[in-house]
Image (cartoon, rainbow, N blue to C red; front, side, top):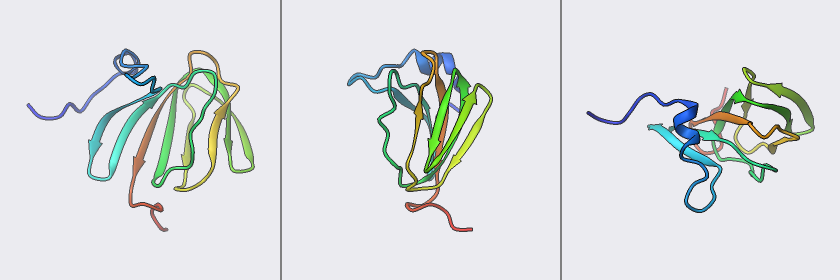
Amino acid sequence: MGTPVKYSVEHALQQLPGPAGERFVELLRHGSMRTELYAPRGHDPQQPHAQDELYFVQRGSGEFVQGEARHHFAAGDAFFVPAGQHHRFENFSDDFATWVVFWGPPGGERE
């Protein structure tokens, strides 16, 4: 039948935390694209990534720090983060969960 092409937030959350306490789970992959559900608890320890990324907030609210900017967010919001840029979620609610899509070459796509 091949690789599944559909996942739900509920299905992804059932896989968290991962075996080593991971707060993300990769669900879809095709070429350079991969899609994860990210649901940190307490704090967001992530570092800049090698690829461009999109976040689609599914649950919760809080603040998204991107470089020097700080943005309030809620379910339904989306953010673009270019490869290599410092970013993190702060002051987020306990139910926070977001899809994250990575794609493109290391260093990000060029305009």
